[in-house]
Image 1 (tube, helix red, strand yellow):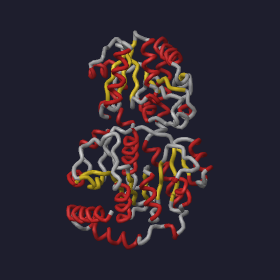
Image 2 (tube, helix red, strand yellow; image 1 turned 180 degrees about the horizontal axis):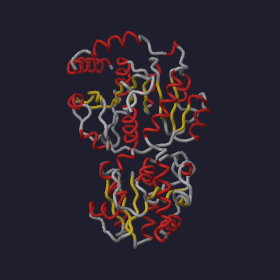
Image 3 (tube, helix red, strand yellow; image 1 turned 180 degrees about the vertical axis):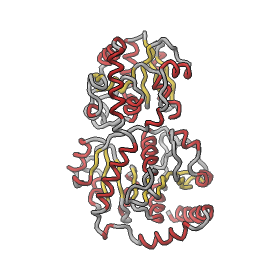
Image 4 (cartoon, one colour; image 1 turned 120 degrees about the vertical axis):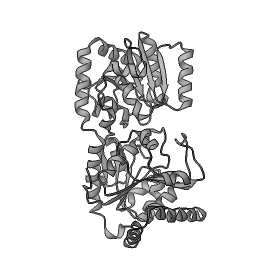
Length: 431
């Protein structure tokens, strides 16, 4: 793909918790992999310790997220020692300031982030920022203040409903860009036959397998999956993913309800996920309508399901229905209604030709939802917005810092890391 855009340098500042089981970190790494192939100078920043700071991108990190390309990963050494993957609620209050400070020193043409705490510092120091945000904002939220800054290039979000929310709170309409989540098709190649995938995973060859992948939070529809499983004892239901406490909770529920046809696999690396998806007869997106983000969600799993040519049954929620159409590329069920899910699953199992047709249609359409195409459209948006920034909103001393960075680029890479490490230690003492 190579350098394609006039944005010659871009830095993505993560929340600081990569690698982790948190779903947003998977979205971030897939986005950054695509960005790194299009921007000449690109960095992804997270937190780490002294050892990981020197290590940068490694095979363990790539395997965790199923990445196919290496790119520059900067792990700021704000911890003495940290074990990865990061735990569920990891947060270091020093990280947002240090990440913003690091971006200021490197002075990229654009900073991309999903982290409001970082946004605050970046806007204050005049850095050009592209903010991706997937949640509604209330009128008394401090985030509304972000919309007043000229150097906020724009906001990327998942649904028109969220875009309208931001505009009503003061964001200029031309500063919002709507884009669904996406998929890395290469992670699901080569195509696997159902029987081959089942043999690889030691799954029964004759059973009808219904699968859900993702976190096991109740608002994701797990109670509906379990209730549906109770109504369909002849089928095997598999749950892939989840934190250990959620896994144990669901296993306990299954034991208490004698759900012997439910198998809780837990988290698997991206490199193994494809085999589980290929091994199934029907894939589920059972999101509950009671979830506060139900009407705006754009689940990563949805596009992964579409990529493996397996029929999908999903909750009939508004933003999901902008991708899935009942009877055309999936079957839609009434949210929180196990009888509706059972009926849709049974319909697919009893009509193999219909199941094949829906799955094939979804597969053809998923090519519109790749990380590569999503990144192209977002960069087109960002370039147009950058060209409209007034000179006064650009970062201070940009030429000075770029001159410094030009000198640094000719230094040995180890010497550069040594200098930066000293800067980080000094900055941490000040903060």
